[in-house]
Image (cartoon, rainbow, N blue to C red; front, side, top):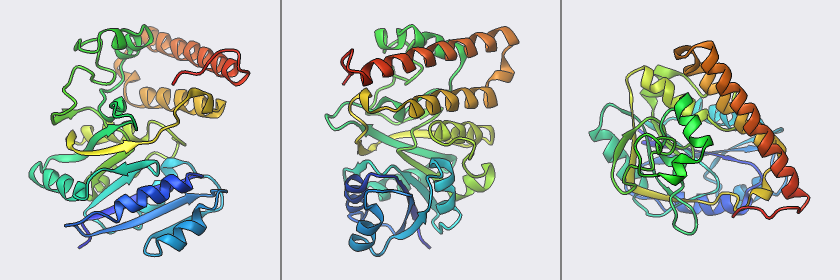
Length: 295
C-alpha cells in the first residue's frame, strides 16, 4: 500500500514548485505518490514538471479552479493511507519528514490531522501553523493588536496560540494548509474540502469538521518546512484581500455564528467590513507608492 499521497497545487510558482518537488523526492523510508494539480499556470510550470519529474501524476486544469477544488481533484485519485496537502512554495528540511509524521500519527491513533513546524526563510515561525478556532473575542483581541502586544497571554494570544512553545508537540484547534497531513479515514468521515472556499480557510474548515467527528488535530514540530510566502504586502492583489475576508467570515458563519446572538454576530460582521475597507485602502496606497510596504 502507498503510505502517503502528496498533493501539490501549482499556480505560476514554477521555480518554487520544482524546488518543492526536489525535497519531496528526497524522502526515504516510506512509500509515496505525488500528484500535482496545475491551475492553468502561464509560466511554463507544466512543461518543466513533465521534463524534470516524469514520475509525477500531473493534472492540467484549463482554468484556475482554486485551492479546494484542485486539491479535491487529486484526493479523489489518491491511493495513500495518508493524504498530505503541501504548498508549492514550501521546502521539506529533512529526508525523513514523511516517516516521522507517519510514525507520530500511527502512535496517536485518534490524530486525524497533523501539521508541522513552519518557518519563513529567515527562520521566524510562520504563526498560522498552529491556531485556535476563531471566535468574537479572538477576533476582537486580534483587531486591537493585543495578540502581538501580549503573545504569551493565554487569552490575548489565542489567535496564533503564541503562548505555546513552538518546539513542543501540542493538540491544537487548527493547522495551516501549507503542510496538512490527514488520514484517509478522516476524509471518509468528514468529506472533501469545501469548494465554496476558492482560497484561504479551507484548512480551518476541515479542522472544524474533524473536531466535530471527534478526531484530534496536532502540531508536531519534529517535522519542519520552510514556507516561501510573498515577502511584502505590495504583492497582494485586491482579489486576495477579498478572498481572505470572505473565507474567514464564511467559516465563522458556518461553524461559530450559531453559538452567539444576533448582536454579537452583527458586530463581528461590521468589524470584518471595517477591516476589509482598511486593508483595501492601505493596499491601494501601497500600490500607488504613497506608503512603504511592510516586510
